[in-house]
Structure formats: C-alpha cells, structure tokens
Length: 151
Image (tube, rainbow, N blue to C red; front, top):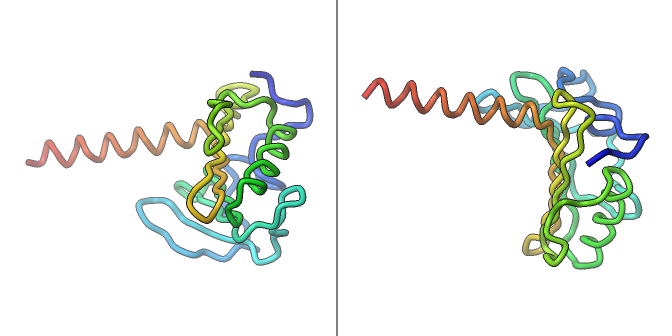
C-alpha cells in the first residue's frame, strides 16, 4: 500500500534507527531493548489524550513506539481515524472492532507497521520499524539456536 505523501518513517521528530535522544529518560533496559520516555512529549494524538508514550530502542536505535489511551470504543475509533489519515487505509480485518493494522513502506528500509488494539480498559497502538522487527526476531532465533547447541 502506498503511504500518504506526508509520511515519514518513524514517530514525530524521530526516524527509525535514530539513537536515544538526550532529552529522553531511560525507563529500563533488557535483552538489547531500552525503553525510554520523553517528559516533554505531548500526550495527545488528534483529540485523543494518551496515558503514555514509550519509545523502544533496539541496540540503541529507535525500533518501536508504544502509545496507550484509556480504552473505550469511541477512543479506539478516534485513534483509528487519525492513524488512517496518517498512514493510509488499513489492511487489517475491518469487521474487527478490536484490532486493525497497517504496513506502510517507501522501501524495505523504511517499512513501518502500525497496530491499534482494543484491550480491556485501554487502547494500545504499536508503531514499529519493519526492518528492526525482523532483526529482533532473527536475533532471538540465533540466540535460541546457540542455546540449543550448548545442550
């Protein structure tokens, strides 16, 4: 699917693969994934107030952004409209009112995947670099293979 002309791979002022900016606060670090937040972040997407924005850096490079909002069907619909405007039409199951996803790319190095999920009490949005997600999965497989060979 072709992205809107204004699409830039990443989130707000950050692009996939950017290092952790100095204005972020590191929340945790485990298995090469560092979770960080930005105290100055505007906790709003469109008219939806967010409860958090978490940036996830794989090997110190931006890979995933997680957004969370209080979960009501109206909030889900509001986020769905904003995300559709930003990323184009969904390729998810339009009959599902609890999950939709997009894959937007200019080329494979800039591929972006967006998921919006209605969960009990909240709506979660995951925006991620396709390239980073593939690398994380490949590294998990390599680690498991190495561990199995040590048996």
